[in-house]
Image (cartoon, rainbow over all chains, first blue to last red; front, side):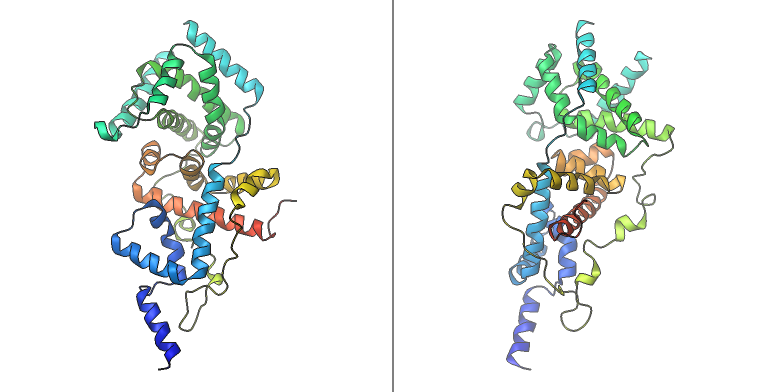
Amino acid sequence: MTREEIKIYVLDYLAGRMTCKEFVEIITDYLEGTMTFWERIRFHLHLGLCFGCRVYLRQTQQTIQTVGRLPREPVPPAVREQLLKRFRNWKTQ
Amino acid sequence: MKQVAVSFDDQVDMMVEQALPSGGSVQKTDPEELRLVERLRSGDEAAFASLVDRHHNSLLRMAMAHVSDRSVAEEVVQDTWIGVLEGLDRFQGRSSLKTWIFSILFHKAKTRGVRESRHVSFSPLGASADEFEAPAVDPSRFRTSGHWAGYWASYPQPWDENTPEKLLLSKESCTFLEKAIQALPPNLRQIIILRDVEGLSSGETCKILGISETNQHVRLHRARSRVRRALEQYMEGGARPA
């Protein structure tokens, strides 16, 4: 076994033999905080070793942030006015 | 007619409040929300207008997941607001106001959807296999052989740190994202609206939709993965709307 191969095996072992394909499927467990302690360790080890998965995690976080801040379309004035009218009627009841 | 509506809302109240823990420490009500409820009860029109402005769109989109056309969805949302007004005096703040409003919508939309026989099934059996089994990332993005099978064949391209800000500043990209959300199957769309657009917790989302944590989790994962993928294509210029 060459030095390089040994390095790969050691890293692989440390990373809990997690593939990137697995990583992208458990990312929600991580973000939701539903991982066990050991799962989190495996996840972090892979994350620390894999540039692609760091990018993937960051992209997912950025997607969530963007979706959460999408501007709200204004309520059509006619609909809004009708609802406010309802409210006034309700109030006087 | 009115009598029926009131008893229906009572049922919703009961369902939501039974489902939510009533212990002091996990209580959802924040003082600001209680003040808002007080203002609504006292007939403060500006308070109601702000509530409408805040939630109308998401309510409409949620309704669209159950009924076939927009005008029906709009009626459902109108009904929901009426339900909110009628139920306001009985609202006890044991769930958050938002959760309560979306629960009312969900029940009204579901009833209407059943009538239109376009009800979204929330059982795993009723959902298409695709929703549950489609991988988060296209399998062709990973190596298929050798020691590194299952690892990235080519890394995703990093996005700029201020990507969210940049996207939000552009009308075109906001429209693109809206469309990406609309393109999700109804089951997934509802989850992303409640969780990521409205910012509700997973517990609240489960209660509104009457689904298990596991189910909610799987759907959230699918929904977010698809939106990320759409955004990635957009960022790389592959899916820019004409």
